[in-house]
Image (cartoon, rainbow, N blue to C red):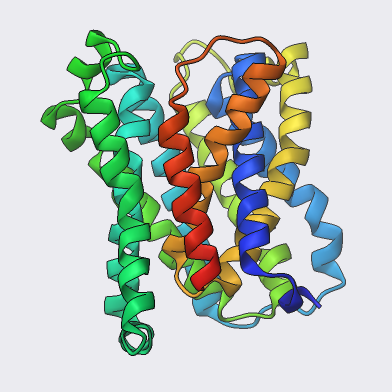
Length: 309
């Protein structure tokens, strides 16, 4: 049944719920690490009853991949937050699309058969190359040369130093896509959605909980460190995030299970996330610096990628 759902429909939903999660944090202004602890354990608790009644994956390699994926997500989240704090959010928006062609190339190296099969249809191959490169090219062009859309302060932030600092996030994004693609390929579609979502969330939540406790002031007890988890805005924001991110993760793992290349999912996610953000800001009359032409280019490249896949 799950295999009948086109991978690109869940990839689009993945982009939509990715945007919703960012908007939730934008509204509640919750400490990201506290939020990660909330949805990490929350997602696992929601999905655990389904795990109990499903056949458990028996491959040790599968669980190793899950552990590695959770660890990569943990490092990626923390590095991204550090980059935003040091250089501003513009750096994340500018450099993240580099992961798309990188993931495409690495996947082809690891699975050369997919590359040669695509190369047999040279016109499709050429269009695919263009589509996976459009996000990085267009975003660089607009951030460097659009004076109306980007402030001088933001332009100064986009430097080689910032790229070097953010580079691990690009690698983490690629590794996460590859690890997930391999892990979901080892189990059934239902197991890929339920077990991957629940277990990766649990691992990520555990690492963030450990980091939260270990990074707290020495004079604070564990109980005092975790006390903010009971604050009203964190409880509300965390509860909403659990629901949103459970759907987000389910869509993510379904699309990665059936997509011919994990980079395609990232391309669609990057394209549809800003659309939802723009719509939300229009509805709530919130000012933004959205570049509508850039968003249109990204959306067009994703739609072409969907049509030829």
